[in-house]
Image 1 (cartoon, rainbow, N blue to C red):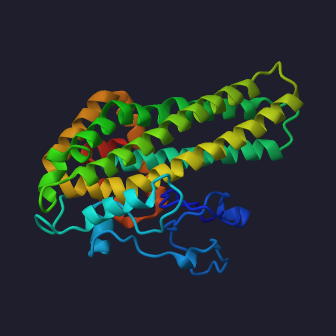
Image 2 (image 1 turned 90 degrees about the vertical axis):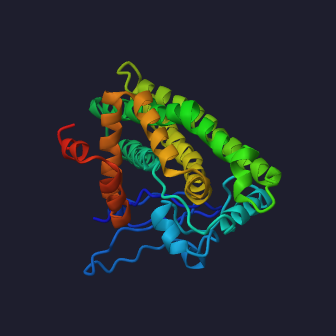
Image 3 (image 1 turned 45 degrees about the horizontal axis):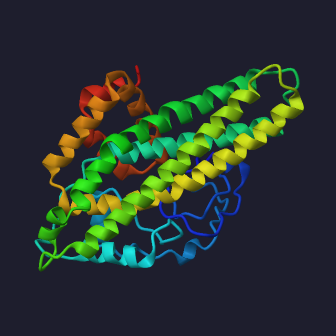
Length: 334
């Protein structure tokens, strides 16, 4: 069966129509999703509302190269919390060829892959809650225990690790390199970067708002999943809690999807525009130190699974290029 691709691009106000069950698709805000390759023998149609209206991301003139080097993607702009003036200001900056047309390679792929892993696991959690809601669970608490364990992993490990790095390191990194006139000014003709730095400050603030809301939803989600696994609760109460978990999972994805679109379409290209490779690699080392060896290994396994499940060859190539050989060999053991 086809697997739902986890690489979310740009969320908009419409909703994806529900696909055939064996495609494992879920109803969600419309996104432009790079779908995995479809078997030529499988003639089932994957219908995505308004997908035909997608237009290329107006970034630089070399959009194809941008997608490969920067790690971003083409898509359409939607309701991701950024006003048009702010977006236009950032896009004009990204489109500027001042101080050379070539950008730095993008090396902070771990943040992208971790986000891909978080989205993948969040969707799997939602599907598990829906499955338990539709199934007959009388006298069987194993499913509810599995739900609590899954919620604990998604919320208290995967998302907690991702947001810990974001709050302690990544946001400070963005503010230093994108929100200071001394950092942006050299890339702007005339050197006046007030409008650009203000726009990036709004962008970072919006990303932080999505983080805060995601954490609130995550805490509620885990509390409900834990309560559902309590054997002293009645089946009726457990079913009500399952509904809460399903709704919270959807709400969490509704926060993560536009946050991801901002990362892919604006933040990643901006970092490639102004931050040298050496500085990006130094940031990667700080992330490893922050997570610690054991936690880094576990997150790397999730990143690997998300990248390979995506079916995107460019992402696989990036993974092979960025992750040391020994670590890649050990993933199966970890």
